[in-house]
Length: 578
Image (cartoon, rainbow, N blue to C red; front, top):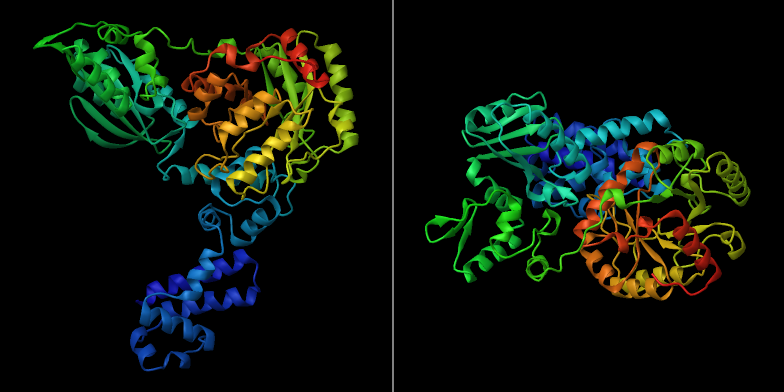
């Protein structure tokens, strides 16, 4: 191992020791040792083999032994063990401008933050504002630093990618060379994580259209430019591929490039059983193409109902379309109100009244306020006297804003044993309770499942918040037996939350179809900490659609009177049917 590699490892050991909170003199010794090795004029390997390294100023006994091990074996047991003792995400956080090991240690110790995604979500919840050594400006700068890093990460939240894609779509529609255009690929199928943006367009002058796109202000780099395809990098950092086809090929190309691969394979198989051939250029009977004006006719040519893009995962959609049993998927306009909204009472950025006014402007019939509970000290969780103060304000605002029903709720912490962090008497003062896990994620599948089931057994629990606790691009959800969770939800009349925050989108769409089949009620909640995030429910609706859900499956597609009746009946423990 050469001196540059040795110096890098010594420097990293210094960082790791700082992250562990070791004596600063110990870290400094490794930093100094790294500099000494880096600027050696002698050959490091010769110094080691001749046992002369210990004569170099700044290289003590411990450093001498570790450098010798590195040079002679190419590895260092101490370094490997040290690295294994620290979450990898903490090292990755060092790449955020202005965030050093001391601050990262505070974030880890005080807020249990172990990854960049954890950190971003904590900033979203304003947890850094009151944290010693941080504040509003630090939080803002950290968010900017994370944004910068994500440009080079290669994966993007759907919410980020769709905003960039829609901007490009609007620009391309201004081109005189454009016929029709559509999103394609994973972004059209509403996948929660997107690696790139695909678009398909039709044009009689394809080369002019690809050149037009390559010159847009949002494009930072042209990767490839041809007559029928262009690949560019956008300001966000994400790649965009545009394919341009002849107008008569457009419906088939849009279907083909939307995918998924599994759906396309199944569609081609169906075509084959009907004596047809299907590809990106058309559906053919022999050499004759069956002319289709749009995607609806593409499906009709195979005796199928139109399958919405979000369902095209080969999970039964083709069979359902063939038998007329596709669901009537939920739409954003079906939502009548929202739950899970935070205010300045805990870690929100807007006051209770500001959130009420914003929901009135959005046309909602009701709003469920749920600030954090007392265990969430890092998020300004509410003490009992603060609960009373908030509930008094809600009563005043209900008189002032009669056009909307303001519901008093709480996001109560589920402890490790499944109990909640308020007494029965306190929980009875709320209109509804969302029970959520925010700590102690490392449990076995059985223990994690029983933890949530016990929480749902509590008579005051109305909803189970972000059920698996995942943070997209940062933290896997804890292992759960979802069949048991769904059965418990049905048994105890608990609604499962579909957390619509782009960083969560939890519960995963892959579970939603089963939830719908069983009759488990789902609430699409924004988990909003600021007014702008109220709109995140749109992402939740898209995921609900991907999970085959209809308006009847969604709790907050019900009107205000139905909601009030349901919540009151739940509190009384009277018979309810979902």
